[in-house]
Each structure stands twice: as C-alpha cells, then as structure tokens.
Length: 112
Length: 114
Image 1 (cartoon, rainbow over the protein chains, first blue to last red):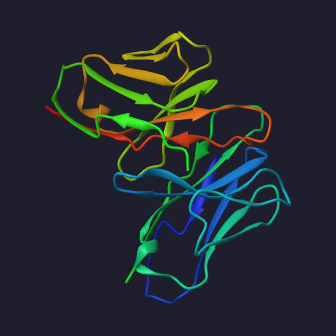
Image 2: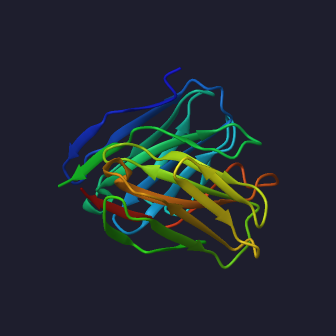
C-alpha cells in the first residue's frame, strides 16, 4: 500500500499560469480532502469530496477547482495562479465512519 | 470558519525536558486527535481520544480529552531530538454531515536542543 500519493512534490509557477495537483489513494477510502498549510495558520480545508461523484467547498475555496475523477483520485486545479496561493498543499483521505485522516507528503507550490 | 486555539505556538526546549501543549474550542467535539508533522512530510496520527475525561498514552506521549469536550492536552515526557516537528490538534464529530472533516489547530512548533 502506497497510502496517499501526491504529484508533483515541488512546483514554481508565474502569476496567471494554471496547473493541476494530483492526489491518489489506494486504501479504498470514501472521502478525500485538499488542505493548504501556511505558517501560523494550521491546515485549512480548500475542498473535499465526501464520496465519488460529489465535491464541496471548504473554508478557503476561492481560486481553486477540484475533480473527483474516481474513488482513488482527487485533483486540485489552479486556473490562474496568484502569489497568495504560494503554500504547501496536502491531500488526505478517510474511510467514512473512521476517525483518522491519512495525509500525502505534500506539494510545495511557489507562485512568482 | 470554526477554529481551534492551540498553544503555545512554538517551544524551544532542551533534550530530556517534558513538553505540554493544549487545544481549546468554542464548541464540543466527540473525538480529539493529535497529529505530528515531521519536516517536509505530511501529518501522521499520534493519538486519538474518544471519550470525555479519557487519558491515553502512546510511549512517551500522553493525551487527555477534556471533561467539557471542548479541550485536549498533549504531554511529551523526556523529549529527544526526533520529537522535533509541528504538532496539531484536531477535533472531529463523526457521523451526520461531517463527512470525516476535521477542524485543526494552528499547530505547535517544537524544537529540541541536544
């Protein structure tokens, strides 16, 4: 089991560029999440997918879109990157009814 | 959105010292979780607490679920250099429309000097 995997690990973008962050889990989990981590702010939820075919906004969704491609994969898209989106992005998943979210290793994104 | 207040924000300690950190919330949770994030990695679960008043240990780590269900504490005894990292508390209300969502504290950055 690879757990939760994320690609890429690092990315540098120019303002206005677009990109998609990929996340996949092989634990047959129902729900998946995208967070951003900024110094002193903890982990803030961007979007989540309670189950395959559904997505919902979290605390900080502006400037992002998501796609739950299938049960395994949940991608995060930045259509027009801004410097304020410089952050570390984490994907996580959970089996509904369980309490532990499992996290990926993160994607470190810099927007110049 | 809902936030947990975690303190202290950072700690600088000597190897061998004990560490305490806590988390408070304005609303109740039926589960409290403590995660650790090593530098350059994603958070990993350390301890999960399921009942008010519960005290749970995992090696040198001890965590408590507050009686009011609005707070939780984590203690680390006899710290070692590999304890370095960011510790996050998280609250969870399983079931209903929570869809597994966790509410995280801001994190405590722990530095251990050899």
